[in-house]
Image 1: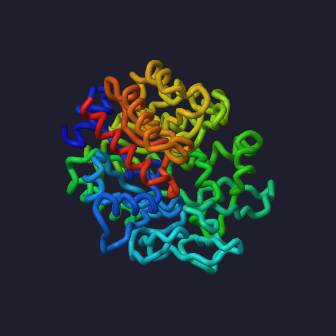
Image 2: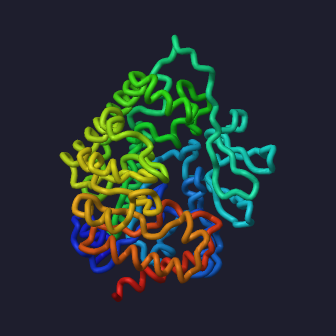
Image 3: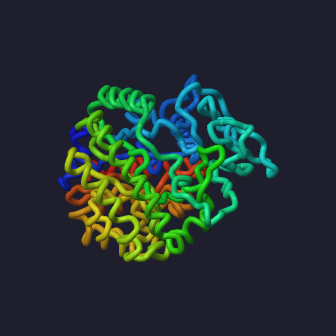
Amino acid sequence: MSARERLQATLEHRQPDRVCVDFGATFVTGMNVCTVHQLRERLLGKRSEPVKVIEPYQMLGEIDDELRAALGIDVIGVLPRRSIFGTEQKDWKPFTMPDGTPCLVPGTFNLTPAPDGGWHMHPEGDTSASPSGHMPANGYFFDAIVRQEPIDEDRLDPADNLEEFGLLGAEDVAYFQTKKRWFQERGDHGTILIIPGSAFGDIALVPAPFLKRPKGIRDIAEWYVSTKTRRGYVLEVFERQCAYALQNLETLIDLFGDTVQVALITGTDFGTQRGPFISVADYRDLYKPFHKQINDLIHRRSGWKTFIHSCGSVYKLLPEFIEAGFDVLNPVQCSAADMDPVRLKREFGKDLVFWGGGVDTQKTMAFGTPEEVYTEVCERIRIFNQDGGFVFDAIHNIQGNTPIENVEAMFRAIRDSATR
């Protein structure tokens, strides 16, 4: 099978010739730039140009055509035009990570020193604006800085939480046209498109690190409280956000057509390590109606499958995700409560494609031996890839301080699984 055929078979719950693999196609299935740099040097030797940081919030490195081929990766993806800090993938310039890794960052990736010896990031690279991100000394990625203005209940306006949403403009359409051509030039690959503006209540986006002066409810704790105490406000935000997303989806479906196979809809987390973050009733009332509208439009107008990212224990929510129309679950956090891989495959394997869950990044990848990584990867492939319906990826992004020997053991196990 070609990589595209392999992904299609997987999405249709047919047994592929080998497990389908994704690393680097999305903002939740990537690798820190430090890891990508080490992999390149191990597999391909030194290169004249450092690895590009394509997602600066988590400092994810680009897995380019050469490295993708060397690793046997099947899926490619398109990120939004602007990053979570408002940067664009252009005008590359050199940067050095705290551990000494050289890389390239966007031209508007502008930092100022933080008091702890780390770095502050500024929205759109404007260092005159208050910082919206912080990388600690010896860190590998940024945390958002909450910049909540005082809340005046009498003047609270849902429009303030909608500043970042709207219809695609001419620059956005031109960007996606370029990315369609990029997909077509790599037509033998599986494809995934990240849909802008369709993640309702994604807590990574609530603080709006891309806005110079965010208004509305932008404090993380305050937002979560508001889903209970200001539910009407939150619902109005979601309703207006959904109206924009549906119109933009019409544009993207017309533009990309069958070039795309999967649409990543949301990265809102609904699980914790111990159980769901919200009740089933709250999901049904607050999120499911909007997820269903998005998914129904995509299924009605295209052949795309829809992808939900939610960390943690979401076992009790899976029937709701399926009813909402989602086809793909990521990251399949098997280390969380009730997320046993055998049980998940048995109970939901006919309805959901499991994308991720191939190895535990919290423990095994970070602290295990290469032998332990190899064993776990082989076992997860054996369980999840039976009768298709599994795209191999780790449980969320691989972090920059992961031992490179463990990353190599993971890819060795993936290759070896194809011969079994």
